[in-house]
Length: 252
Image (cartoon, rainbow, N blue to C red; front, top):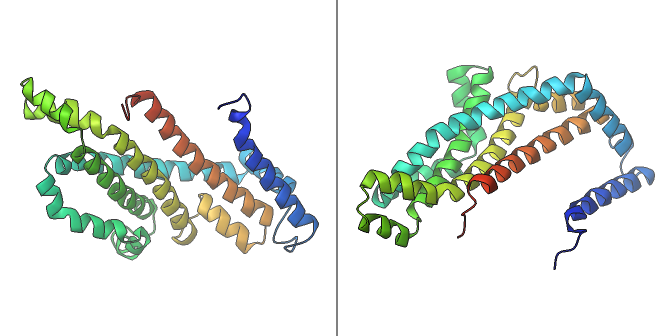
């Protein structure tokens, strides 16, 4: 039974985390140099986002992640629909898709570094590669599992194969497509941040975390980590809200 307090329940976890963090600092469970207080971290976060370097790095990571997920979606969604429309065709490439989907995307860094160098092209292409495989799998799975009764009803009413594909299979696959997009954008963000740490970056949240760690600027490091976490949460929430708005028939 829902109560008026239910919307505020997530805040309990946040308050609990802050209390545990303050206790860890107070009792020096970890050296204060390595674990600054929540107030110091939040101060660094506010200063960095309101006019410092962190705000610029945040938007650079947003740009790379957005480009990666757009490229991944543009390739994976049409390909997933095409493959999912023919189960035999999908099964013929199932091993290849699963093989690369199971391969850590970071393993592609050396190859793409040779092809594109240390610029943004490598970071974006690796993130797009990892996200595309996740989206492709989910789109194809959604198309293949479109409800047989709706497909049969469309065919009985004389719908062409193209109409069945666009008006039934495509709409039926949208809930699973959004699952792929949410997972894909989370994976793309992870890959972009890791790439910013280690592939010749001069900006981005990954670079900010790595640089702050090297300089032992721990409040700045934790601030950058929280900014990355907030970005990931925000992107996932954005896709979830869009899904609820435009795929309201899911599960019905």
